[in-house]
Length: 238
Image (tube, rainbow, N blue to C red; front, top):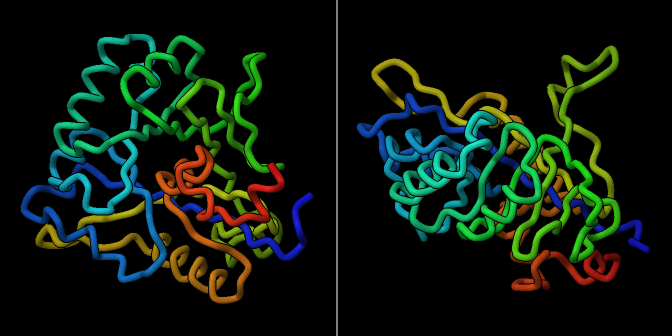
């Protein structure tokens, strides 16, 4: 059973538009001005445009459209192009549902984490149980499906809350929002909503309510490669 004082684990994912071009490559990596880590989600052409050096501590997920799931050749091409831009790529963000064979293919291609809009049971359960209540699943050896958390605000003050949710102690929250935007002269800016989320996440860390992580760090902890990063109390609850 999880302790009541166990902090939530919070992962913030943000998108990179293809319009962030080569003339501004490298600027975005330090542009948030926040100590809260971010996992950046981008299509292969967006990754190629910004020219991200792999292995520099930046966490990246390749966006794969639903139409590509029906073709292994197309997925293989997308992954190859993504790795041309970011050689250490091992996370993808899927639109649509990947079946058992498609997940096995992703494992063979060196993918370790899949960000999904919803977890779907396939009868196999989780080979390695996650902490209780976490919306993630190790349905294939070496691969974790991780569900993005709903961020739609509800109620009369929803406009003020602006997508930030109440954190569950000991829970996992993986949030996705717009990341960067391009202003006049091609200058890159952090999207206002991401700025609000990063400031909010920093306050939750300062209060001891949450700890922040990237998708890569989360998977390393779930896989046992960095078990201490998740905290003994959370792993004990698995």
